[in-house]
Each structure stands twice: as C-alpha cells, then as structure tokens.
Image (cartoon, rainbow, N blue to C red; front, side, top):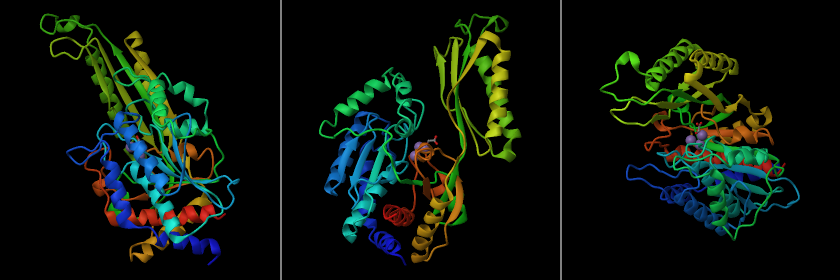
Length: 424
Ligand code: GLV
Ligand code: MN
Ligand code: MN
Ligand code: MN
C-alpha cells in the first residue's frame, strides 16, 4: 500500500456509525414532521435554522466556514498545502415539500463525518477538504433545481435565478438576501473557485441496489432531464349554465394533451423514458367555475437524450396545433452526465474495501435516475457519486429510509475516496 492508500484506509476505519446516525437525527429535527419525514424547502425559516446548526457542527470540528453569493455553505478542513485546490464533497440541505431525512442531508453530514474521522485518525491530508451544503437543489420552492451548484460552476447563471418566485410570490433573490444576512459572522467566498475533485454521496432514491442486495453503488452518470411548463387558456364561466358545446374549458384541453404524453411515454418504455406531470395549477380552482387557465409541469428524463429530443418535438407540435389556446416553455434542461473513469475506479476501490470488511457483496455500477448537484460540478472538476440503497426504492416521501448499516458503509467509502483524492 502506498502512503496515500494507508491513510485512506485509516480514515475509512475511523468513521463512527453512532456519531453519524446521531447527526442525521439532529438535522432531521429541522423541519421534522409527525410522519417521520422532513419539510425543509430551500431558504425557509427551518432551512436557515438548519444552516446555523451545520455551521456550529463544522466549527466544532475545527472547520473554517464560508458562504458564497448563492448562499452555498462551505466547511473547510485545512491541509498541508492550502494553496492547492481542495477536494470537495457534500450535497444539499434542502428537501422537497414532503421529503425524508436523507435526500441531500446524508451527503452533507457524511462529509462532516469524514472530517471527524480524519481528526480522530490524526491524518493531515496534502490538500484541504471542503464539505458543501448547496442551496436549492430540489427546485420545488424556486425553479429550477440545482441553483446553488450550477451558479457556483457558472456564476452568470445566478442573475437568471433571482426573479424566480415561490407560490407566495417571494422572489428567490430576496430569500437569498435574507439567508446571507442570517449568517453575518460567516465570511464570503468566491464562486467558481478551483476544486481538484468532487465526490457526492447520496441515497439511490430508486430500487436498483436494494433489488440486487448490494450495499454500495458506483454511479457512472446521470440521465438527461428537461422541465417544461404548459399553459392552457380557456374562459371562466358558470359550470351549471354554460352548454357543453359553448365552453372554452382549459382543463378539457389539458387532459387529452396529458394523456397523449403518457401514451408517448408508454410507447417508449423500452428506452426507459420517464414522464411526470407533477404540478397543476387551475384557475380559479373552483368546483363550479369552468377552468379559465390550467398550467402544468412536465418532467421528462431518459439516459438517451435523443429520446428527449423526439419527446420535446412531439410536445411542441401538440401545443402548436392548439394555436393561441396553449403555450409551452422549457425552463430546465441537462444532457446526460458521464463521470470520468479514474474517479469511478477510485470509488470502486473504496467501496470494495468497505463492503468486503463488512462481509457484503462488492459494489455495482449504476446510473442515477435523479439529478444531483454533481451533475453541474462535473463541468468544473473531476466528479463522481456513491449511492447507498433506498428501502423500497422510495424517496421524495416521508417514508424514505436506508438501513443504518448501508449509511455507514457509504460514509466509509466516501472517507477513503476523499482522503485518497486529498493526498494526490
Ligand atoms: C431532484 O431530486 C430530482 O432529481 O428531481
Ligand atoms: Mn438529493
Ligand atoms: Mn431530491
Ligand atoms: Mn435530487
């Protein structure tokens, strides 16, 4: 073993499962729900409180804390050569309107646990290590998602996010100012800072690892995603008095379009095209008024971007055929992400060691169905991800869960990977 592999193994062996589980429970209290889930949408009061909690935890570990213009939080553990670009790990602190304890939070807390393990092992890495908590990965309160990581990688994107409003018409730009003002003691750092490599640990949020009975996944890439907003225009009128053939009912136009989209997706089942019509807004949303306007979102994803090209063309043609009665706009798009082979090789080495020590099967390679901050960071520095199984494949749900043993193994693999990268 080289010196670097020795300290990577030492870091791995100092990960403390009890401390990890306690940290997950403590963060889940911010926005904790009676059903066991977590509601901590980005930049809400509970999110800001959870950020202050993370800052305290990181400072207790000896980290320097910094925040950038998009309120991304960085917790930095110094190395021997602090002039070198750091190794980055972490994930996002925000959740869906009804989320679980792990989506995002796990990756951030895992990063802090790696730092605790390095402290306990007395290891000084060559490069500094930074743990990040990205702002607004989810995109549920302010669209699009992955605002923090995409703006970090390309700061000119931030200006385009500021006017995004939530359902109460709060601007993202204003929520961001409030967030930055809530941590006056945290120095500002630059966006787009050089990073030597990035590893994001996350729950799979799907059924692949659990079905295979394998505790660790080496994520080779992320499928392509596009988000659209479709608006159907009609005319509000009385539900009881207006004859059926004299209505301009926006819902009567939206429903057949939705069905055509589902039919298209069903016909593309072989390419594993995924379609979600997740958010519907009906005006005036009244039981006895004909809908004057219906707006719904389309989330389409596929590992093969050319399938999305065809699906988008189909959607646009259907909308165009309706003339002025329908509009569509795309507000988010990402091509498939492919993580670099040397990163995958290192993660495989780390995950193989962790699983073997636990007497469990070797890691498997898989692609990510969900998008992640790592998707944008991959444009900035060599990046990859590690997955652990999700019970019943469920996420974006209060019932989201992972066996504590697997959560532990994931952090062990992360500790090895980050330490090895920090000594390169
Ligand atoms: C975010 O969690 C997404 O993949 O939609
Ligand atoms: Mn996530
Ligand atoms: Mn999510
Ligand atoms: Mn996500």
